[in-house]
Image (cartoon, rainbow, N blue to C red; front, side, top):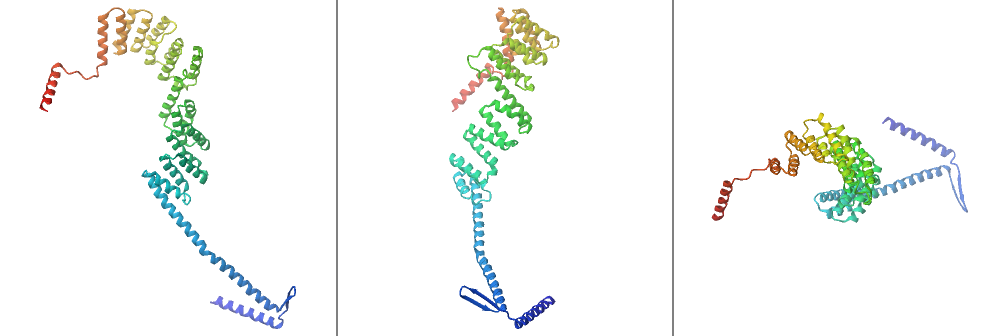
Length: 427
């Protein structure tokens, strides 16, 4: 209240002072333009200017206030469109989850432009189009998604890869994944998809190059990576000879096999199954002497019963030397049934028939094996001991059939037949 009174006093004082000045000297102002002139006092001109300023200020404010309803209407319309788009998006996603592909594609496409998250609309609509077999429409929708949200290239690319995989477009899918890998080299899902595509393409070289990264980023469990790694190198090893020209000579084939074997990681080069595959490939390449020396070194460094059995099947360059090498293993492994089986086979190759039979019998004493029974029966048949051969064969068959259920006796069979006849007659 005091401030208002003070302001009024100031206004009155200023008005009295200005009034006194106006009385003392009203001033004179002349404004001339072409042949027109305006004459007035200074104070009148100041009042006119003040009134003009207030009028212009009021007019400007009135103009902007007149535009305000239009802006509010525009904001309201935008909110309404966004709300409708959200509703259509929800209905479209619901239709997609229910498998109503056509409705889902229509709703999601229509609401994409006004949606707060158009990326979701376009990707989901592309999925719906793909489910209907509309490949071109699906591709166009993904392209719209990329144009609308270019920073989401990885997400859009993954959606494209999933669709390409379901179409069976493996080569385009691989190209897309390699591009995504450059954009996001540590993206584990991209690497997992790339692994799957390499497997389906049977691109073993590409897969072996990818395995170190899968292991480093822990994309898969170590057990899965180890199995995958073994499968890759096993396939590469088995396909070495088939990938060579038909006219390749034995020396060329041996070099190719040796090179492929040397590329295998050391942790796999001692795996029994890998060693067996390599030896089988060497035998296929007519390099059985190389297979014998390689297998001999493997057994020397790491004793393995399966490899010992395999050694007896290989025809080395010198059968007598091969037998002596195997005999040398008896000192450290006197109770090995596999070694006795191998010695029996090698003794047969050296035509030491009696010694071979002894080795087979010693092997059977240590471990009953149908494989050993077959070898001994074959040997006895060759020596003319038919009855003994049949006895050994029967023992082998008995061993094979240990887990079979027993056949019914003749009495049981007759009773079962009578019961069946009675049941049939009653019907």
